[in-house]
Amino acid sequence: MNIEERVNIAILMKYYGKILTDKQREILSMYVDNNLSLQEVSEELNISRQAVKDTLDKAINILNKTEDSLKFISRDKRIISFINNKSNKEIDETTKKQLLSILEDE
Image (cartoon, rainbow, N blue to C red; front, side, top):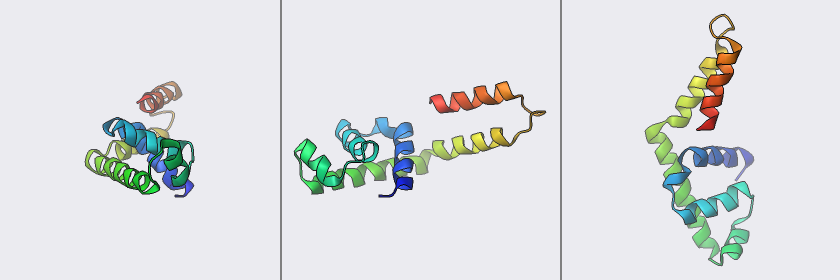
Protein backbone atom coordinates (compact mmCIF):
# COMPACT_ATOMS: atom_id res chain seq x y z
CA MET A 1 0.00 0.00 0.00
CA ASN A 2 1.51 3.33 -1.04
CA ILE A 3 1.45 6.57 0.93
CA GLU A 4 -1.45 8.02 -1.06
CA GLU A 5 -3.60 4.98 -0.31
CA ARG A 6 -2.67 5.21 3.38
CA VAL A 7 -3.63 8.89 3.48
CA ASN A 8 -6.97 8.16 1.79
CA ILE A 9 -7.71 5.40 4.29
CA ALA A 10 -6.74 7.69 7.17
CA ILE A 11 -9.21 10.28 5.88
CA LEU A 12 -11.91 7.63 5.55
CA MET A 13 -11.16 6.54 9.12
CA LYS A 14 -11.51 10.11 10.37
CA TYR A 15 -14.96 10.40 8.84
CA TYR A 16 -16.36 6.90 9.21
CA GLY A 17 -14.10 4.95 11.56
CA LYS A 18 -16.75 4.73 14.26
CA ILE A 19 -18.90 2.43 12.13
CA LEU A 20 -16.18 -0.23 12.19
CA THR A 21 -15.81 -2.76 14.97
CA ASP A 22 -13.18 -2.13 17.62
CA LYS A 23 -11.03 -4.92 16.16
CA GLN A 24 -11.31 -3.51 12.62
CA ARG A 25 -10.33 -0.04 13.87
CA GLU A 26 -7.42 -1.46 15.85
CA ILE A 27 -6.03 -3.46 12.93
CA LEU A 28 -6.52 -0.62 10.46
CA SER A 29 -4.84 1.83 12.81
CA MET A 30 -1.88 -0.46 13.37
CA TYR A 31 -1.47 -1.01 9.64
CA VAL A 32 -2.14 2.53 8.38
CA ASP A 33 -1.26 4.88 11.25
CA ASN A 34 1.62 2.89 12.73
CA ASN A 35 2.83 1.61 9.36
CA LEU A 36 3.11 -1.99 10.57
CA SER A 37 3.24 -4.83 8.07
CA LEU A 38 0.59 -7.54 7.93
CA GLN A 39 3.03 -9.87 9.64
CA GLU A 40 3.81 -7.37 12.39
CA VAL A 41 0.12 -6.79 13.08
CA SER A 42 -0.53 -10.53 13.15
CA GLU A 43 2.31 -11.10 15.61
CA GLU A 44 1.23 -8.19 17.81
CA LEU A 45 -2.36 -9.45 18.00
CA ASN A 46 -1.50 -13.14 17.92
CA ILE A 47 -3.72 -13.84 14.91
CA SER A 48 -2.90 -15.13 11.45
CA ARG A 49 -1.58 -12.90 8.72
CA GLN A 50 -4.57 -13.95 6.60
CA ALA A 51 -6.99 -12.83 9.35
CA VAL A 52 -5.29 -9.43 9.37
CA LYS A 53 -5.53 -9.14 5.59
CA ASP A 54 -9.18 -10.23 5.55
CA THR A 55 -10.06 -7.75 8.30
CA LEU A 56 -8.23 -4.92 6.53
CA ASP A 57 -9.92 -5.69 3.22
CA LYS A 58 -13.35 -5.83 4.82
CA ALA A 59 -12.85 -2.62 6.84
CA ILE A 60 -11.53 -0.68 3.84
CA ASN A 61 -14.43 -1.95 1.75
CA ILE A 62 -16.91 -0.77 4.40
CA LEU A 63 -15.28 2.67 4.55
CA ASN A 64 -15.27 3.05 0.76
CA LYS A 65 -18.89 1.95 0.42
CA THR A 66 -19.91 4.37 3.16
CA GLU A 67 -18.21 7.28 1.37
CA ASP A 68 -19.78 6.16 -1.92
CA SER A 69 -23.19 6.36 -0.25
CA LEU A 70 -22.84 9.42 1.96
CA LYS A 71 -20.21 11.43 0.07
CA PHE A 72 -19.24 13.51 3.13
CA ILE A 73 -15.57 13.65 2.15
CA SER A 74 -16.24 14.74 -1.41
CA ARG A 75 -18.77 17.30 -0.12
CA ASP A 76 -16.22 18.76 2.30
CA LYS A 77 -13.55 18.89 -0.41
CA ARG A 78 -15.94 20.85 -2.64
CA ILE A 79 -16.76 23.24 0.22
CA ILE A 80 -13.07 23.78 0.99
CA SER A 81 -12.33 24.40 -2.68
CA PHE A 82 -15.23 26.86 -2.87
CA ILE A 83 -14.03 28.74 0.22
CA ASN A 84 -10.43 28.86 -0.97
CA ASN A 85 -11.43 30.14 -4.40
CA LYS A 86 -13.45 33.08 -3.09
CA SER A 87 -11.74 36.44 -3.24
CA ASN A 88 -11.31 38.61 -0.17
CA LYS A 89 -14.09 40.86 -1.46
CA GLU A 90 -16.53 37.97 -1.45
CA ILE A 91 -15.48 36.52 1.89
CA ASP A 92 -13.16 38.03 4.46
CA GLU A 93 -10.09 36.11 5.64
CA THR A 94 -11.39 35.67 9.21
CA THR A 95 -14.63 34.11 8.00
CA LYS A 96 -12.69 31.90 5.60
CA LYS A 97 -10.49 30.63 8.45
CA GLN A 98 -13.51 30.03 10.69
CA LEU A 99 -15.31 28.02 8.01
CA LEU A 100 -12.24 25.92 7.28
CA SER A 101 -11.73 25.35 11.00
CA ILE A 102 -15.28 24.08 11.37
CA LEU A 103 -14.73 21.56 8.57
CA GLU A 104 -11.46 20.34 10.09
CA ASP A 105 -13.00 19.78 13.53
CA GLU A 106 -15.46 17.15 12.37
